[in-house]
Every structure is written in C-alpha cells, then in structure tokens.
Image 1 (cartoon, rainbow, N blue to C red):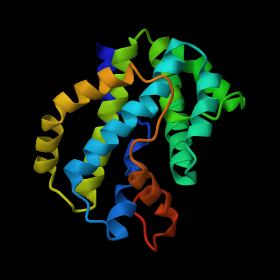
Image 2 (cartoon, one colour):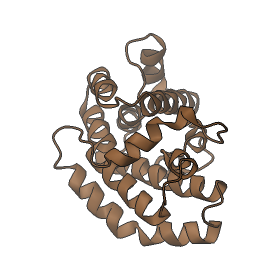
Image 3 (cartoon, rainbow, N blue to C red):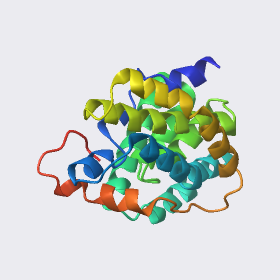
Length: 209
C-alpha cells in the first residue's frame, strides 16, 4: 500500500504536470471545452488505450508492449509526451527503488523507447503491485493531470477540480473494469487526439503537450 501511495503522490517526480493531455491545445484553438466532459473522454480513452498497454507490460514483456505503444500513438505530440513521461517515471523509480533499476537500464540501452503506460506496468510488477493497482495509479494520474491543467489554464478553480475529481470515482471504476476486457489498444476519442496533435502549432504554450 505504501509504495502504491508513493507512486500516486504528486511529489513523485515523473513529469506528468508538464502535460495537459491535449486540453491546452483544445482551449487555445477555440474548442468550447467542457472540462468535465473532456475528462470523461480522457478516462475512457485511457481505459481502451493506455491501460491495455499497461496491463500487457505488467503481465510480461515491456519491449513488446512498448513497441505496440509506439505503433498505437500515431500523433507525434502524444507519442513524444508518452516517451517523455515514461522515461521520467522509469528514472525516478530507479532512483527510489532498487527493483526498478533494470527497467530504466533497458530504456537507456535502447531496448525500449520508454512509453509511459508500459513502463508503469513494468515498474508496478517489479515493485510487487497488482495489475489493477497499477492501472488505478495510472488512471488516477491521468484524471489528476487533466484537472490540474484545467486549473493552471484558468478554466476551473482548485476546489471545483477536486469536486469534479471526486465525482468521477464511479466512472473510473467502470473504466478499470472495461480495460480488463479490451484485447488491443483502441482510439475512442479521436477529436481529443486531433486537437492535441496541433499543440506544436500554438504561438505560446504552458505545457509540453
């Protein structure tokens, strides 16, 4: 339980707060974003995409599921963000836990690109965390990341963000359950992906993606 809480803590230096999951691009490009709706879409996208890759890597074969992540993430912005977050997560885990050192070494040796979801799955397994626990940590981080970005972009306030986060618990439970039944990663929110892919076109940017 303590390692699970440590990985989910905002103090764990995995670099997630540098990314908005496409929310910044959506707002800057004039999309009438409803933060609650955007977050719900992000949850279902994670359930059908990232969590499938995470579960596969947890069950074994980081390099294989890392390759699948590379093929799945066709947006150059999402692909770059996934590798940046995955490598940061692996490096932080290696510094914090001896058991995770081999995963970071695999990435540094070029045997895997270090995509975020597979890395979290592999690290969680190395630390003795369950598959569903790993998926919950990742999904919690995805929700927190979108809502934190919304606060920093001035779309909602911090108390509203917490209220939204609390109200999404049941949906997160359903998303976790759904992710167990998906055989291969699937795109369920193409509009979010298209808007996020235009992030590099923004004149000024607060986030990396």
